Length: 312
Length: 312
Image (cartoon, rainbow over all chains, first blue to last red):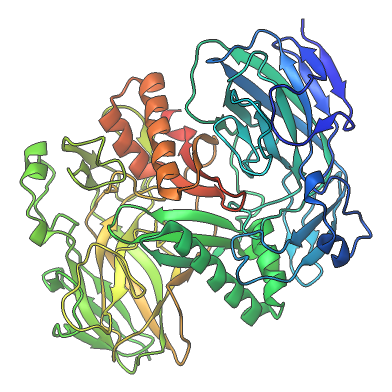
């Protein structure tokens, strides 16, 4: 028999640290409904202005709810997490935060866009400057405590997961994480209403929502890194009209990714008349970075796929 | 009035060099049917064995048909190429070529698989060791001559295109290339029946086919790098059942890409009982490398998406 538990968003922490007191212990097979707080830790609200981005206290960003002990999980096991459902809040925010994001050297001024979307129908969401963005809720930060002692920043993802910002960790996906400590010590947060692969400006449609997860343990199944299985197609909410695609070509994948994003911003600003900062945020919430070619030495191709449906 | 021209595959060259004599001059608006030779330059045929991979003469690989002068194209213009159609041959090959490919340090032995597919229906194509791979023809090498004098290797892609190996340069896509020399000097070849983003083992389903392209010139429209527009969705031939996904997480995108591919090979070999070399080739023809996250300093996430439909 499996149980259903609930954890309130007040039971959150900052940073990964295997010495944090657990807030709940569950048995394998149990499900948990997690309340979460948005990635700003509540510092940005529906009525916020760009001033709130300037004033962000980074000590309070990216809270995660937990940690949860999954009874019997041991180092060397795999934690199997089935992402069951999301209860979105209906609003979110996207920001350019100075010093953060793929093109932080080009975009030094903060910006903020507040989104409002239909939390029942999840229909494409109007972007103030222009366009409509398809919605697909997922959790940006999902992970277990690392074996290494001490407090580790919540910002970078690691072997044990964390702030992976993988847009397909959505409803129906099954995620597998390597366990490094007894009980796994699982936490989740940083829910997003939509994001493109890469999250290029550094933020998605950051949107508080509750979510339900189910936990199982696979014994003695050592993973090198997280993996996941999606339950079906991952892009049909946005691919119907095809894509505009820009590329970067060269021997450095990072430089090529920056080039592809820069060229897309140029294209969007010239065709749709929104400014570069707005176009950069729009790419972050709907455009996908792909590695088209990584073998034709010495030059690789990174492509940014922008869904045409946004402007149709 | 626009014309339709034909170029036989005998009119091919190796390397990009703006001093090569053009084989045809066309007017903007004209279409051309190109015959091509496969990427081995005819050294691998339907009856080949791995010995033919060992004996490959690299002076004869990756021939391209052309060059074609597009009358009136000038440096600083953009060449607009509409990819109209392909006439596939119905067979192809995939190889591991020692010293070539993303995991060339792990896979030092050559391998070869010969594919046979339905050239009319383009139904998924049986892979001898196991699985069926969805087919989507495209051209791997498509480009114009660089301004820089001399002969430049055909292997790496460049600002002016070339061996980009972008799997969505398929029927209906419109490609835009920056023109660097008078007349553009366009060539095409290296046709593929299927490939995943990345082309991780270094070869796709290499498959000779004829193709029809249409050319237009956009005056005074300077592109930094190639870009393209797809006419519709790009993954519906393979996404229906969802994906198995492996990740690599770290500060080096190249290392993370290698990690994701290595983990997928491990997964396929353990679940489907085919060997690692076979799994590596299979990833190359159907699995997509994506950059899931590129902003959460100092660790990025690269993911490899393997379509479940291959084994269902």
